[in-house]
Length: 306
Image 1 (cartoon, rainbow, N blue to C red):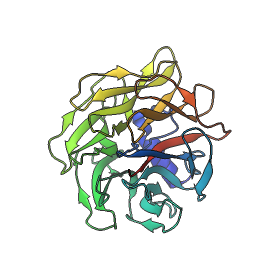
Image 2 (spheres, helix red, strand yellow):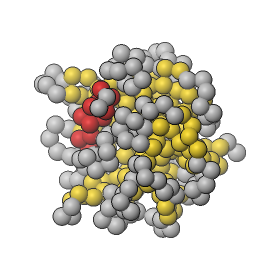
Image 3 (cartoon, rainbow, N blue to C red):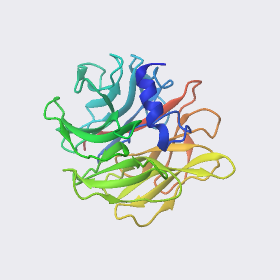
Image 4 (cartoon, rainbow, N blue to C red):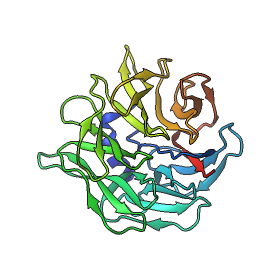
């Protein structure tokens, strides 16, 4: 197992091992619906693929086996992801939508879960570091999309991961794993101030994404109903209007809104393997998109500018 895989396992506290490791938040910006980006393979050996929402046109985009947390840029022309190309570090990198022009943005750390600012000029991410009390901690950082201007956004003893920048640019939501209790969703302003808790359930919450209009967040909640499962929920940006979208006693995680706000892609193990599915934003019409022997994760929907 690579050093990167170890970091993902250590950050997997909020996932309870159900989804194969800690994953970044997906991200979407308003526009027409383009391709769905995803990873195929296990932690430490995943590659980038794209597929049309109807399941056709599947093709490899980046065949190197060290990619995680891929996210489309606001204009749908670039992809940011975390990479362990040079162990023991995990770095944030950017590549063009055609798989060309690879560029590294960070170095010398364990950097995960990148997310774009709506103007495409900055990228927020989680950086893992040793905690003063032992073990690991993770805080949120921000870097320019050209790799300069590194800024730390949070300073806590918790593990903060999966940042998601709201499409209106005002807020960053993230998953906070405390030393005691389940993980929860917290929201801060883009400058790192004004933290407020959005969910505080006895169950762990993870895998979040803003809706294109910045009014709601979709996320996965781990449930214990005699067996460990996970379901997709949505909640208002004000913490109200919690609604459950899936209910099948399986593992449903990693929701990703479509740019038009009408659909949500997600990962489900309901058929035994981690595959991509799509449903309406109200939870109706759930259908399978991919059929593969390999595990598929981290869907993100490409915005196509109108």
